[in-house]
Amino acid sequence: MIKIFVISLETALERRQHIFNQLNQLNLDFEFFNALRGDQNIQSNKNYDYLFRERLFGRQMTAGEIGCFRSHQELWKIAVELNQTLCIMEDDVTLSPNFGEILNKLETYTNYDILRMSGIFLRKHYLWAIYNEIHLVKYWRDPMGTQCYLVNPRSAKRLLEKSTLIQVPVDDFIGDYALHKLNVVGCKNYPVLHDISIPSQLGNRHKKKYFTLAGKVYRELYLQTRNIKKLLVQVSFFILAQLRNKNAN
Picture 1 (cartoon, one colour):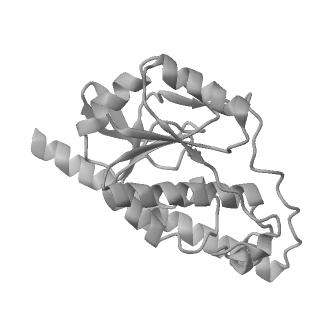
Picture 2 (cartoon, helix red, strand yellow):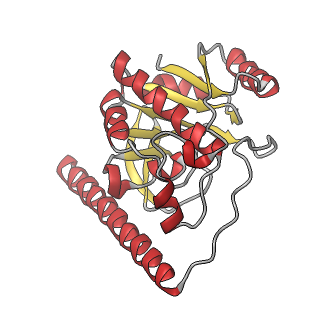
């Protein structure tokens, strides 16, 4: 079985009990990873790109968002060190009764870099593969969220290489296909859902600064160029899928 790590603050006892009960009921072994906290003095956070955030977004990430990103980074390091695929999960989720069965079926599947077991938004997608009766899809736009996903050691190493400076929340980073160019796929019907009844621990967003006209133009040019690059990466995977299916027939 793929090793499960649950990111959770050591003091979040109710949230820990919430996820413990679910995993225990499914007879799944797991380990808690004590979530890291960012420095409340945002500018002093190590490896955080304060100037980039100020210039492009006019608003800093919260200490919670920085700590969350670093928690995921530490687990990517563990995936590399153990040289094995990990299931990385956050503690504010609801698991489907067949989560363990799906995880077991996916243990031998390898045609991905990151495999989403959850997502916040529904996005347009196309079929990537059917494996052990599980429909796997690729999204044209990222569905957001990092509540649960599988990552193999090669991809974990790539994520670490591309995140030496923290510039955006971790789900935005994983959704930046233009940056890491990894093959991100997901289950057609997510076996893990974000439990919106559980309050966020990421903290309140900082106030956004006023942008000059030049600043607004620069920001839009940067973001639109990035979006085009993301789309081109996804198109290349779409073409690859069509060619594979054609050869299979």
